[in-house]
Length: 313
Image 1 (cartoon, rainbow, N blue to C red):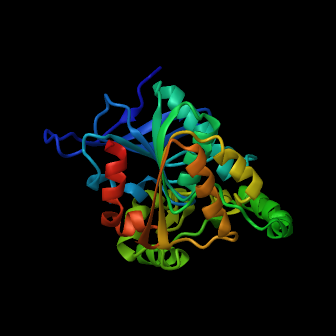
Image 2 (tube, rainbow, N blue to C red):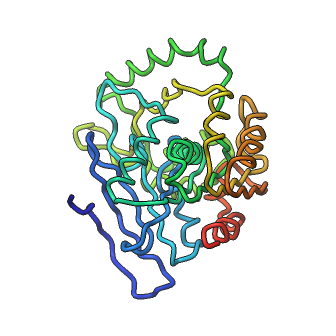
């Protein structure tokens, strides 16, 4: 098996992580990522939130123990990773289980450690439940498990989601919106509704946007992520399903809940999942920390100590 593509320089300072851009081959293209630290040690696999990218960990990684390498990936359709082929839906809370498995098998890892924010935390939860003897520990930031949505809302929105999916799939490149840099940053800042600040948006957009291709005949920037991700809300979970998966988790768990953090349709699910994990997981560490949903990006100093202690224990 060939080695992933790498780039960027190295440092002779053992307290500073080298950072390399990598590409992992998958059947539909590549999964891109940033590898922080040693390439001869098994890294923590870091997974970002919905419509974010690997840059979400850019401010946190430098604050974590330098002897622990971290591979932060762009999930399919995000950042620099390949989009799914036309005709394929994104089932965001399910797809990541197979993706993690592909990466684990590609590198030949054993007893892995996962670090996830939001969707990435839910995927860590799902992988730990699906392969309970193969996960040593996982860290979940501002989510307990897959999101449980109101079934009536899901039923009412299904038809609209399918029509939007088909529209995005057939949208010609010439119709793809392009923006000036400042306009792009302001749009993203408004969309996140207070969860991130201006500087954090700039960090995310290093991987989240690109110059409009010449054949667009437009100047400016476009979003790198797949438009179809906007309608990736099919395949949602019931509370019973989430709790059934929680019962299978055996590994050590660190859960960091932001305050006020993200608002959920069914906020009681969070506490219910944590109660199950306390019975089934080998260890559960739980913190409530002041901050927004993206507190690991906006205020990484508030969570770095807790995460570092959990990783090195």
